[in-house]
Amino acid sequence: MPKVELNLEDDELKELLLGDRDKAMQSIMTKILDEILKSEATEQIKAKAYERSDERTNSRHGYRVRQLTTRVGSLELHVPKLRHGNFSTQLFKRYQRSEQAFDLALMEMVIQGVSTRKVAEITKKLCGTAFSKSTVSALCNNLDDQVLDFNRRPLTQKYAFVYADAILFKVHRGHVVTSNSLLVAIGIDPSGRREVLGFDIGDSESKAAWMDFFSELKQRGLTNVDMFVSDAHCGLKDAITTQFQGSLWQRCQFHFSNDCTSILALKDRKEVANRLKDLFRRIVE
Image (cartoon, rainbow, N blue to C red; front, side, top):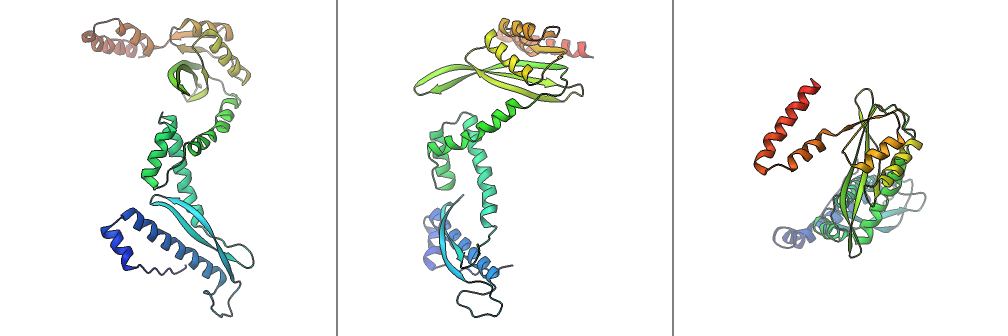
């Protein structure tokens, strides 16, 4: 295990206690990590810098600068180079795992609707380094291949029931806001396990959009569905009837309850909703 020695200047301690703590922590973290890298090099070479030793297996050959983004800011580290072979360190691998988790958090923010500009501002506050809007967008683009693979995987299981629904949302394209629909299908196998079968973005919840969506699911292997469950949207019902002839259809209880209570006075909605829940529960029992 390499031994690390760290000497802090008085000015650094004063800065940490009385001044700009973020700046002081960056300086201290840089020193600590640089010392760890030096100690790892000493352990691999079996000798300190300029030390004469019979156990020496290699020699130092300068260093290369590498930037490392951490929670205290961007650090400029000096990674040792060896005259023969490559210097090996676990330091960056450990931080890489943290960076991957951080990248996933950035993607999640964008998915939840936070703009790339605001994400850049958040990273500045968290890390002391602002990720540009283009960098955040590039990170999110890495999800594209995973989404495509998910939506193209074969559907080899038997799904007794399939829930189909559309989620409406707004999309900013330049300075224009448009309405879009996220079409989603969730399958339930005979054991009761639920699985998202696929999803797609359409300009509307039309029959044509649902026809294309179901056609894609059939090509991937979805067949012999016992029953579809959805709202009473005409385009969706017609697409189910056309694409899956012989499958039963049932109106979604949640949507049915919402439709019933939406025409009532506000004071009556909760009571009616509870009565409907009780009714559905009795039917199941």
